[in-house]
Length: 365
Image 1 (cartoon, rainbow, N blue to C red):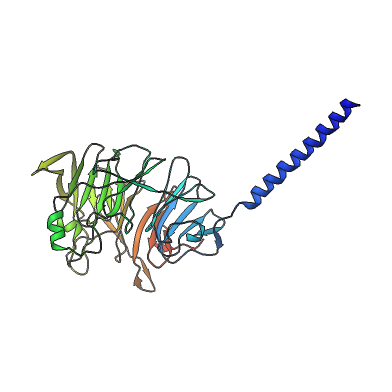
Image 2: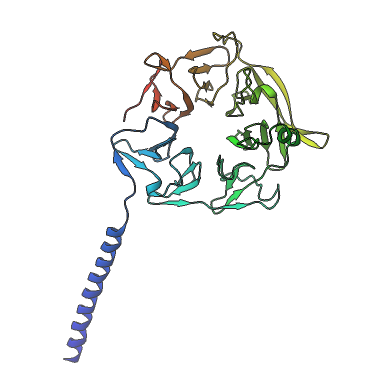
């Protein structure tokens, strides 16, 4: 009798425990917040295009946050879901499939469920925390403490790095004491085939970091336009021959792995070569400035201008693709090649465009 009583008690306890566990699990599942809103279309201001390893497309807007398209539905994420800002400047992915979104106000990590913010650790000296590790992610945050150098994330910590003083700094700040931006602002980050990091700055040219030293390359025509404007280094690309292109098609650069020292300054050692020679514009200029560039699977270079369409260079000749809407040139921002080798354009106000083999057309999921 006593044994039966114990057995009945055990069965009742087990059932109660199981039911309690199921209720708790259901409560946890019901308490999970589903982020994002399902929408029917993308923003008109899509600056960034990125495809994750799982096939999902991410589109970063300058005004409306980010959009994820899985081939079936579009989910819009904004500051209401945890984004630092709705003004996107970059999208990356780590080896674990986490998505990182850099904005004007900071960096978010998305693990598939929630957005978390990365908090930066400032460097104590100009060389503190500068490292070159293959799995690190690099970021630039314009307008938010990004006036000293780039950011490096090693999977655990985000380091705010600082460039050493540029040799033109004293002269620059004397000439422009009240500039609203810093000449150290990082406009573009590029990793070449050797793993070397390159940083395009607003006014101090190109910075190279090879894991041992930081060196600089500055030529006035790369940063400053013929009409007196400041373009900055917005694009860096290594071609099939291992030569480099910076911002315009006037020259390409044969870069030596060595650096040189002049008056205590560490400079990139290079030789300048002729660039693309079959470009002719209506204003008489025989070269173009490009906002963004890629090298496709065949080795062809695609270059996006702000308002003069796209140029494709196969190493011998160039092909121009005008990009217009209602007869007007579309202001462009970036170019991207996805995992299926499809070419995309990010635009300021015309959504996202996709190359159909002959021209670029508006993409509507």
